[in-house]
Amino acid sequence: MMLAGCGCERESIGNCTVEKLSQSNEICGASGYSKVMSGDTTVADCCAAIKAVQDCYTVCSCDTECAVQDTATACPATGTLKDPIGFWQSILEGLSKDGETCATAGVTGTKC
Image (cartoon, rainbow, N blue to C red; front, side, top):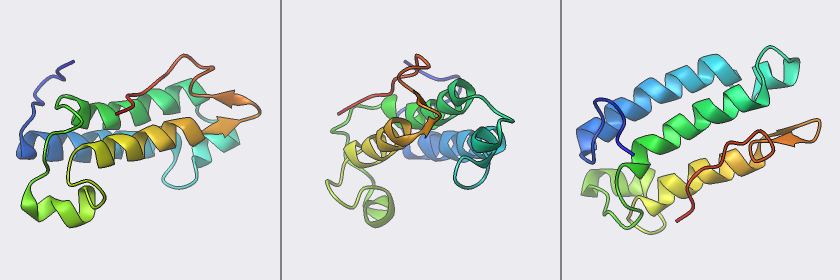
């Protein structure tokens, strides 16, 4: 799935991530899903925002190699986009409030 204006290039992924991460923080709360936990945001809306961040990376395949300058910070385990895609998947799988999860809200991410 291609996002508008985002492609499988380093600059596009970076721009997409900055934008979607900012939106995710606004929707979910800047730390600990504070807006979800307070009831200001639904689990489904937060999960959709988190998935949008993951989607910045899934425009590429999981085995796409990271740029050398990004390996230490974004891709330390495998050197590929499997690392950030897996990171955001773990966030999606870990979000839970009162028994509601991203999966029960119908939002599933991408597993490599």
